[in-house]
Image (cartoon, rainbow, N blue to C red; front, side, top):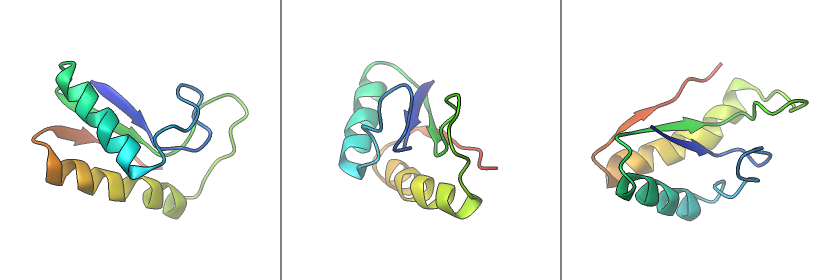
Length: 81
């Protein structure tokens, strides 16, 4: 499983993948590295992170999930609120 954080305050990647092109390039890298499912996260889980509303999380996650499904033959998981 590859984890794709699309949050601007991600503790693991510093918000590198909020840009859709960067996110797709990272998905491509993860697939080439052997992952068979991509989990897309839209809310930071770092200590002290601000909670986001469901609509904001959906705005972060849905466009990238749709783009992944169009470009790649891979399973995608996401759980919002």
